Image (cartoon, rainbow, N blue to C red; front, side, top):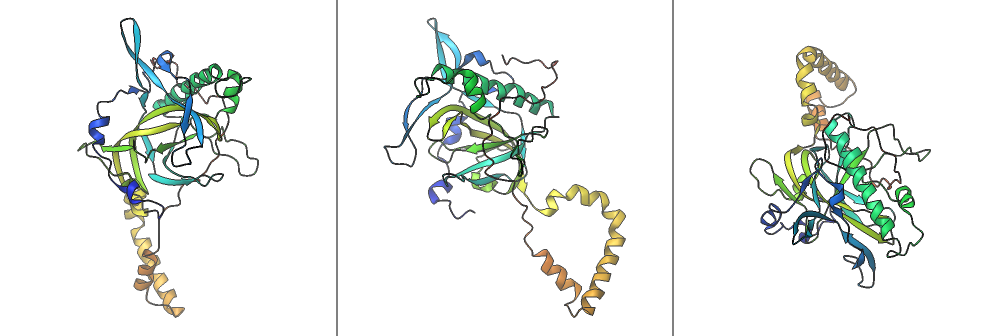
Length: 326
């Protein structure tokens, strides 16, 4: 457990399942972008900071019906496709501010039709719609000369690409990835197991291999860190999780080759034992025991990847797929 965690953060959320299970949400491939609304940004206090520090923000809403000829709105929450993470919940430290946050890193393999659609239609579509709202509220946020085109070029996409460490250019020829950011404040992220529907404390998902279905909220931010569209994971259905270690991550490979190479492996152990004795070392069994005690925790993915500014979509999903995004 990270030393920076407080007991307050570790404490279980109260009555969260009852609060969230009946809340509105729309599936990622059923979003009607014409129903997405972003209210005029208003001044808000920065959480945990001096009350004089503020930003302009708004939470997105979605038209869900009509009453007396007027549209009704609910908080915009959307369900993504199943995502995979090899490392589970990880800690991120902002290089510029030193702020600590928690998120789940997931690769976005574009060869998968569902992931492709999620990236090129859902996330790109949400980014474009939010850029339209940014142009509409340009004067309200103190950027009267900011156009929609300008917003497209300067505001980061909702997903990321890795950067070349030498040239600092984005690797657009590779699959993108996503950090699903957790909220550990009052309205904290809720993880629910798919089988028993019980809440899983988020800290039990640190350093685990997992698959989950995320549910996100979307907002607008304008302040000292520029302009962005915060997308936070408010809830997730956990499909499976298990501790990440050498045995579990290599189980399939071990099962496939163990019979073929078992004799050769045993011979190599005998040879190593003879070498150890010849070098004045302890017997092979104790040497192997010490090796097995070494930390085999996998290296976590590269963190603190800077937000990239891009508006070029990646390869589109096959056009034959039916969809309601527009």
